[in-house]
Length: 154
Image (cartoon, rainbow, N blue to C red):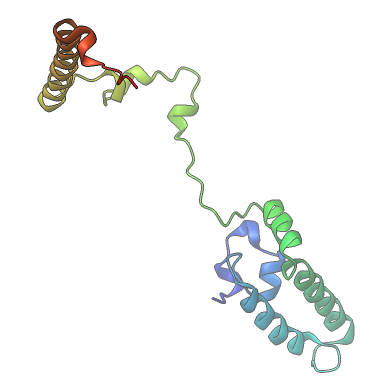
């Protein structure tokens, strides 16, 4: 998933990812591959660049790889540059407003809506069943009395 440095957002320009030519979502394998390719390009012994420039770029490349190849250091670095691997849903500016009133919303709250006919019917059946069970238990208790529960004698 290599990308050229010019396709990165401005906040990631001149970052460790930019030095390796990668996007911050690059995998460990992609980081290792980019490091190997770039190290051949900038190593003072194998480059056509002036020694001072090659040494500086190679050191920057080593620093970038040292950070990005270590999971803890990479996580810390990603936090520093404002990159997150997890997409976070941001609240709308209207909700951050001081005078935000949820009652002004066009949608009815789930707890403040009328019950549908199916829900009313289910509640009715539930109530009838409960009252019927109570009535049956009372009727059995009154008609059977102590004969309903007989303890066998030895």
